Length: 79
Image (cartoon, rainbow, N blue to C red; front, side):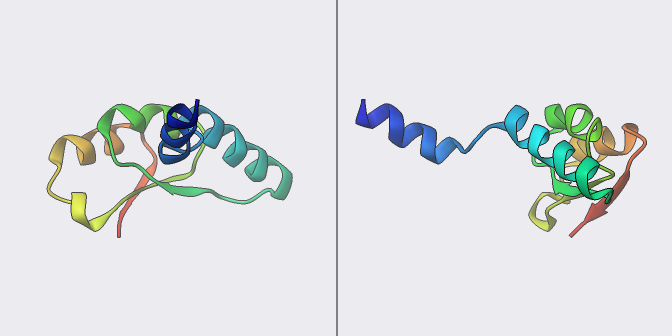
């Protein structure tokens, strides 16, 4: 239905599909990948693909998020 289509557009492609795309780009172009992380629950999954976890500046006070990002062993950048 139209309502479902609108919800899907707002939600984006989702983390799984997004990480597949980033992994493909990383492999094909042999480059490092950096991407934003907004939720602590995403850190480990995102770190399995990217080289640097980027935390938006408006989330710098979210110590749980920063700690989870740091525990992945990946570089963390607060922008």
